[in-house]
Length: 421
Image: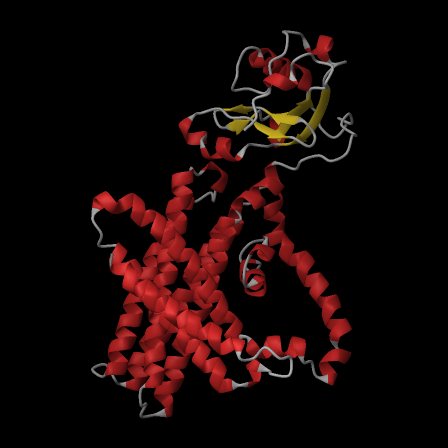
């Protein structure tokens, strides 16, 4: 295939990078102090990524009968690309890393104040799940300006829609910078101008993919109603958008390598570079939030209870007995529900079944299958708690409350017939 030679070349670039870093094994050898080495490493990483991008472009033109193999290869390539991007980010932030290992006296004196402020930042950032991203500070600063933290107490969807909107906003600003650079530099027919035009085309393509991804999420940002296929489509669109941004950045790097006639032209291109790089980082954060969606949704809908205090129902003003009775009766003889027990009323089983009230829950498979109408159950082996699923969702009551219950060992045969996912 077309990718084989490109993979070999990309691996060669990465191996050269590794050999270069192995020469600096001694603690006294401060590789980050050597600007030439760092720049060479950066060039090698960019070349490796360029080969990967060429492979991805070639895969888009493969025959339909190879589609299954193509999807498998693409997923692995995207993973490798993320690692390459992380390596580039490390090189770009070498000064920060150098400061951590070789701090100045002034920075040591200020460390305590910094850590205190960082603790405050972490507690605020966790509301938006920015700790799941590569660039948590950028995530927090951008998303917190769009989403009010109080809204997130009821639903997590705005986190994901806001992360995409942030990327869209950054790209819109960048396209303005590109237009200004083309106008001020007056190089529309030059090699620099051609690359800026290409960059604007890629930026517009990236915007189109981001908007399409946002439309899948919907106006209500109801991410927990999406199917696996819809989530995969969103991620694919986001990855394609990021790929377009990287193409633009590579074109801008080529401009830097050219002989530039005026300082004004350099400033215009640098603004575009900074804007596109920020947009790319926002896209990385958005993709990582999508990858961590199960973690976010579990925090909202599936908090597994660790203690034994299950009998305080004073916080919830509704009659759970009728609902529980319906669930238990439905469970009899149904392999797809919580457990198989003898038909009993709630009063008869209340001495044997520990009844709990907890937040609404749904299993991963059940949540994804909601649109397909297939029932599933979720099971926590640690607490022996089973969550009933109906049509892909949990047994919901008012105010997103779910009846949870555990079957003790005294119920004969119940543990043998649990439907575990």
